[in-house]
Image 1 (tube, rainbow, N blue to C red):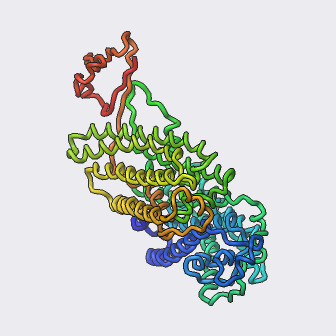
Image 2 (image 1 turned 180 degrees about the horizontal axis):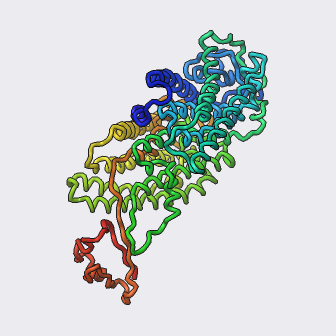
Length: 593
C-alpha cells in the first residue's frame, strides 16, 4: 500500500533526496505513536479503574490489590499488560475524554502518514476531514486542560496548545477557501495544494505529537515514584466530563472516528488503482444510498447492475445495525456491557452484545432482515454472471461459485435468528447455540468470498492475496479460540447453575486481547471485501413488459426480427437460448402480464 502511494505521488517541491529522507524518518515515528496510542484503547475500553469517588479502601488497601484500585495513569497500557506502574495519575474521565481523545489522536497520526506518502498533490480533499477533526481534538482538551502537563509545569501549556492548533486550523481553512475560488468554485482534485494548506498540516502534525513525545520523555527519565497505597488521582471522577454521566457518547464517537479513518486508508488505495467505486467515500456515495436513489431498474433500456454493489450494501446495513443497536443499548440498557455471559466467557464485549438485548433487538431485526434481502440480491446477480461466464470457467469454478452463492443466500435468511436464540446466563443451551451459529457464519462468509477468488480468471493482485490470506487466518483461528473458551467456561458447573457466577471477574482460557483481536479484526477485514475482491464484469439486464398480453402467463414479446421471445410459462424451458443474440443484453429479461 505504501509503495503504491509513493509511486502514485512522487516527491515534489523540496529536492527529491531531502523529501524522501524526511518522509522515511517521519513515517516510522508517526506509525509508532499511532500504534502506541492505539494499544491503550483496549485497556481503556474493557477495564473500569476506580476514581476518587468509587475508591474502596477495604478492598484496595490490602496486600496485592486488584489493578483497578490504582486508577488511570500515564502508560496505562503497560500497567495493565505488564504491571509497569506510573506515579503520574490522570484525573480526566476515561469514557468521555481518554477514549475519544486517544482515538482522535490515532486518526490524526494516520492521516499524517497518508499525507506524507501522497505529498501535496490532492491534499485539499483530505484536508476537509483533517481540519474539523483537529479542531474537535483541540476543543476537547479545554475542559480537561488543568491536568498533565499544566499540573506539572504550573503553566497553561494545554491552553497554549489548543490555541495553536486552532490557529493552524483557521490557516488551513483560509487556504482551502483560496484554492476553491482559484479553481472556479470547484473542489480541486489532483492539483498540488498551496503553501497555506501545507503549512497547516505541518503545524498540526508537530503540535499533536508533543503529548506522546512528552509521555515517552517521562517513561525514559524513570517516571515518578508510586506512593503507597497506590490510589487514583484525588480529583478523578469529579471533573467536567465525569459529571456529564453519559459514557456511551465517548465510546461511540471513538468507534466512528477510528472506522472512518480506517476506511480512508483504503479509499486512498482504491483511488490510486483508479477504482473509486470500491471506496465508501466515492462520489456516488455509500452503496445503500445508491440503491435507495435508484431502487427499480428502468424498463425497455439496458441496465448495468454490479453485484458487488449489493454485497457492499449488505455490509453497510450490518454496520448500520451495529451503530444503531449500540447507541440504543448504551442509552437504555448500559448495564449489559458489564453483565453479560459473552463477556464472562471471553473477557470482553464483542459486537453481538450491542443488539442481544431489548430494546436494541427490536431495531436490529428489521435491519438484519434488510441485510438478508440485499445478500439474496447479490447472490442472484452473481449467479447470473456465473451462468453467463460458464463457458470460460472450469466445472469446479462454476459449481463452487453456484453452491456457495446459494448457501450464502439461505444462511443470511437465517442470520437474524441470532436475535431470537440469544446468549444469556439463564439458558446455557441457547448461549451455546448462539455462539455456534455465529461461528458457522464465519465459514459461510469465507466460502462466499472464496468463491469470488476462485472464479477470477486473472492473476490476483498482491493486495488481494494478502487480504484474503489474513481473512482466511482470522476465519479459522477465531472459532478455535472461541471453542477453547467455551469448553473451559466452568466445565464442572451444571448448566442450571451457570447463573451463579454471573458477577465473577472474567477468567477466559485464552487471553482476551488475543480473542478480541481475531474477532474485531475479522469484522474489519470483512468490511474490506469490496475493496479487494478480484475484478469481475457487471451484469447487463433489460426488463420489458408485454402490454398486449391478454392471458395470464402468455406473452407475445418479440425481438427486433419479429420472432417471439417467450412462450407460455410451461414452455419456457424450450425457448431458444440465443433469442436476444445480436442485441446488447447480456443479462436477463423480465415479463409482466
